[in-house]
Image (cartoon, rainbow, N blue to C red):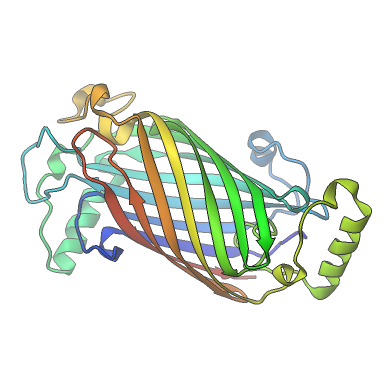
Length: 331
């Protein structure tokens, strides 16, 4: 079950990719580059921050490092002045390490991610958006001088997922409990993922690209037959060995929010920001949804998705954007 393959994963998220048309409103662009691997010996920091059981015949611990940049703007980027009814400009650049631990026997996945970075002008989102809009001959963003000031961005995210329903080999429902703590945002949420189509088991590994061989599949099913706590786990052998996957998915969550530094400013320089929202303006609950199509063949995968979020502050519209994710095995 241990997948020692290495993967590169890139995600581009942008409101230009939504089926509703370009808005440049609220979340407007994000890029994430990730490198996945399984070390033969855990590094010291992995032992300290990810206190997980070792890999086993049914457990697979994948690690990843990533670089992410996110960009946020008010709904009217042609306005150079502060609009007290809208959100501030904000940029966020971060480096992350994470572990995705799958326990096949009990249909459980624990994702733990730590990130550190910077929020503000030195995230260079102003320069990126200005350059890109010049390139495509679009409206120049005029209000970046009012963006949230430089500040440290330290975050920890934990997602726990559990298989809830697997009535058919082409349908499964996975439950989600999520939490985020740090200087960017603090929230807790609950949700689920539904997958319909031709796919490999969700709890083989994080990316779903690597199948196991017929021999490994037979060994796993034999191991299941000998393990009392594993016997009740519904398993479809076809979903262990697919080289081609083609399925639709819907993922949703409802979040209870404590704060959001990308709206309110944070720790060090909040009082130096040209404009931030007040605590009473923040919506304490919002709803996320993502639906899309996942296509993979052997070591290459593509995910096309549409995302939606209800308002995050008083008087705001919903946020809509699209995303394209490409992942491929490099060894």
